[in-house]
Length: 118
Length: 107
View (cartoon, chains in turn yellow, brown):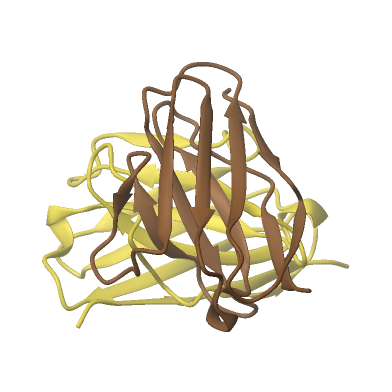
């Protein structure tokens, strides 16, 4: 069974950093692109970033470019999102998802909530 | 970035109705549009990819069509389990962008 389990969320002050993790199981992790998608409370979905199979290519949404870094460790079947210079508008549930190249994400984790507040 | 204009923002339907949601994009996305269903507190669920390809296990009452900049998603014979929010996603160009969502409610 495909499983994606996010962790690392919580309360963080504006301007600080936080690192999210997504542990994958039930499939060959290196066979898939991985992505982060977020959803602010009571708002719509926003694609954050994607990373290619071996991590050689990364893609970011405009609102996080230069502040967030997506990475992966295929040996550990784990996806990461390093978030720096956090702002109140980064408050959201962060989902990790898997996809193939030029395909939409079909499997999603249950999400981890990040709250940026003083 | 490609802008996605999804409408309507909300929709009220009776059981058995047919409903249609549209997404208009700011440029041609070559049919690379997907549709998701999301229920409160849950992760999004992929229903349709590449405009009209139904994901395995998704009921045939869900359908999608379109080309160029104009796309639509329909549910025929709305059932109670279809009450949810729906989102379109373009994945033709990075950054991928979602529509604003449509909340489907029972009349």
